[in-house]
Image 1 (spheres, rainbow, N blue to C red):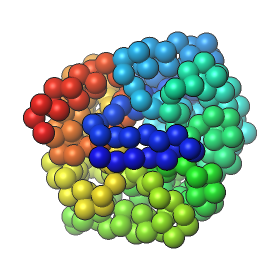
Image 2 (image 1 turned 180 degrees about the vertical axis):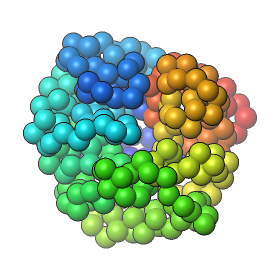
Image 3 (image 1 turned 180 degrees about the horizontal axis):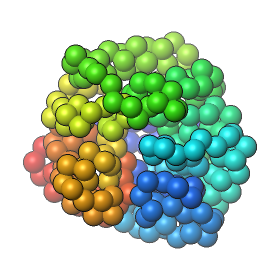
Length: 274
């Protein structure tokens, strides 16, 4: 069991939970996640919450390969109205902000978010860890190598599990020293990793239990799935469920997904096996 202090609200994870993806962007890799209006985002939020999502992850910057990086001002303009509307309409929801900019994270938390989700673990903005500590939010840090422009380039790993685990041991300690008590590791499925590395992460996911932190798994509709199957993001729901199920059996505590209903079904069934 894990507990997260979300700015005074205690989120208890005594069974795996689902984080639903809502992208306030025009170019996310999976078209079904794009919500370019506040009204559309509210409808998606309502649907996800009814299906069982605990956290709604709001992003204003696509991180798909080849995407153009917008500035802080544009990202704020996209996410803040959505966060404010969801926080007002669904106060029971836990909202996370998906950003690697500390300024965006601060504005989002001030507007109703209570979790920061940073794909770079502070590597792209060195103020991010300090910001998370000062805002007293749980912090999701993901593993990747490179810069915003190169993070999707495949890297060579002698042992991907050992390298990613060592990265998180350092990052958890760095966060602890700054005052982050609730650090959530995300191994970074699909980021700066080859297909075989991604499958190795799933196969040996239980290795990260040594961190004694709730592990986030984000495999939803990613290219390792649809390229391996020879399909498309739109056709990769079944493959996503397969890998989510494998991840749950290996210790994943949070599933970050586009499809909440299917993820919740995977959790309900695998709970009988663990």
